[in-house]
Length: 184
Image (cartoon, rainbow, N blue to C red):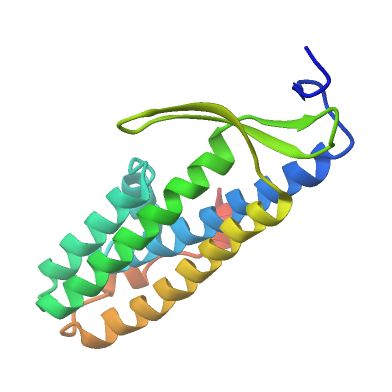
């Protein structure tokens, strides 16, 4: 290993990098939960039953496609479906950026103390190289997730306002997450 190659052992700078990576993961988890909750309500299932289903949906694309299908099933018009589909495309784009932050290994260069990632992708062409990626870059991805989450909250409000009324009888029986924990 030369002085310019990234270290594999923990480096003092790595704690800040890992905290930023964790912030990206946390922001994404909240976005997924918000989408899941909309799916459960549109499906009119109790949250715990809905969680059994949405926990099996791995990607944001799968979630937004399920959301679109439910909007169509609830008689959402083409304009509303277009909004859901545009949101899904944006969320998938940001999701790819999130995946790189979370799934590519992080290193800190010995000679510069700068964070780098070993980029490993092969979407039509191989990308297998170290790439500099600052904490500010990681925060920029987190901020994009925050923006997408804000867009989703607005979309969810628009969805429920535009859809014809439907029964939420089963969904309304959901016990809160903290209440379920106390019962369990």
